[in-house]
Length: 459
Ligand code: 4AD
Ligand code: MG
Image (cartoon, rainbow, N blue to C red):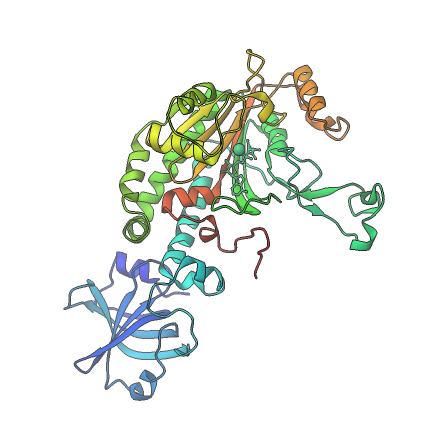
């Protein structure tokens, strides 16, 4: 693998050098005894123009097989391009067809395809400009997340994917079993199962991250999470990735500051490192995207309490599908109204009613709200959910009893409050919703390589 990628070649063109480039043919056109091949290798949205003289050895035979989608090895000399449209081009000395693509059946032809159609060909869609740009941005964001935490002395902890605790308590866990379907009857079938009790795929790494935060101070976990919620929306997946920092000696204000710093830093990194990809989304998917991201980078997030948010919604004169009253969970339509029309940008909503939030959130002194925060962003709605955790043993125990949790099964969680308990806080950032936010892609199924949704898990 000593060849430079097209991205590297375009960034620092080695003019006059002999190069070998591998990639897939996007388009070919012929003019004035020359053929112009647009070759893309996935490293950047821009491809390399390869120019072939039709006198090239074997070219007559080769050209009949060159079609959109075929894989090529191109050798030649990099020169300044005399034509407009590109700065440099490769003057080919040899073209080798590695894998043909029959134009009569290859599904990706030159025209733009709908994202719905592309979802039917998950094995080919990363060869399109938009899906390739999404993949590059995901990779950039993932790396930037690790860099952000590493620069701030956070320890990366690998929390388990198979677990016996249901963090969010919403009953959305997929069961993991080694039993055959016919063995699953009876009162407690899981006693004879692999783990001796019911296990499932994690909905969040938070509870285990808390264990490590109360030993190592600042930790984060970043991995896949699973929810068997039957939500067929443009913002829900059954398998999604979540970034979850957990910090000892940190309250809600500290939690919000870290989340805001993280989001603004990540947006800045994408603007700096994936500018060409962002331009593509700005042009074809979501006009004004770049300007919005530039604003996020430099503007502090607005903040509002849940109670103020409810007042704002009630006084808005809007008629919502779900009527608003104190104590209700905010719906997507309310969240979008608040951040898009009231705040005009990201908005942090704090101090939600305790009865709509999970058991682990810290009770406020008013007795009816908890130290929770959600970050809402335009186009997406809820991007981050977090809280200060209840660190007081008695209050936590009461909340757990109220939530109907088996205290024996969660004795380890209570132990953390018996031995060296400390104020601590954390949040979960939905990685795919973040990718939606920075790309403007409307549907979450198009920002993850292989979406899993109710009734759908191809390849
Ligand atoms: O608000 P959630 O449910 O919070 C938790 O799981 C906490 N335990 C996190 C923590 O404090 N460590 O989920 C966090 C975020 C949401 O704000 C959303 O961005 C994303 O995860 N999310 C989903 N993304 C895609 N598909 C789904 N079904 C999602 N459910 C939540
Ligand atoms: Mg939430």
